[in-house]
Length: 281
Image 1 (cartoon, rainbow, N blue to C red):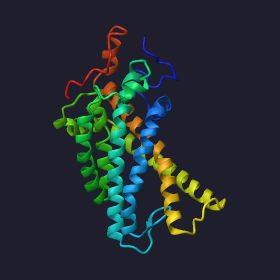
Image 2: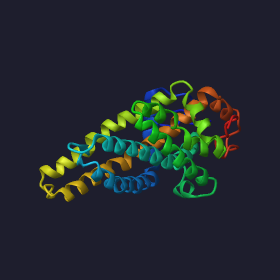
Image 3: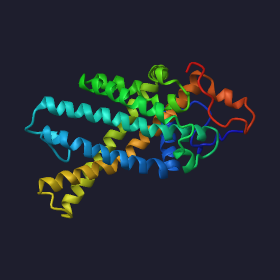
Image 4: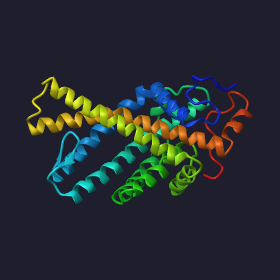
């Protein structure tokens, strides 16, 4: 019988919003040894790539607000940052979705399983990344449209890994799943919650270092590097957490609307090696 207890990472039943958030954190805790190092690499790379754009927009650390620069350039900087975040969460969503699928089947995926290329469909994932990045860039440039774009594109990685959706229909499949019930709203809610936490922790780290005089933050270059390190440290945990949330939400939607939990319950124990693909993939 599947584990339906309160400590299950992903019980085989529809979950409340609070349970979805808890399941995402539990999934990150069990797979942090894989997801967080990947998050560190991607979050650090993001900071390095954004730095020239921040200099161009005269954005001032640690909040990277353009006090005297051009607002259009700063707005473009925000849009590029939003697109970059979406791509990073998508890439982390590949191993997170595989981990969530294993958890739903009552087992814990090993490090080798999550890092093994076989069956991971990294090719489709990587081809989907620039499409997601471009869509999010356009949505972010339009302001409030970012909320819609972020909500609709959440299930992309899970649609690739768990639903085995063809590359040509991945975005459409993700949007269909996101539009069912509360999926898109929960994803946006999770992002906003983590955004508040990220801002608080990053600024806390930065100003904590400044108050203890551990570095000469009067030097603009040192100040910029310190801010980049603080944001990368926080994002290296937040991005994997958001990827886990996407995977959990996706499986919850499939249980609510496609009867995935019933399908698994009717299958003999040990007979299912992976989450069955969706019928409309």
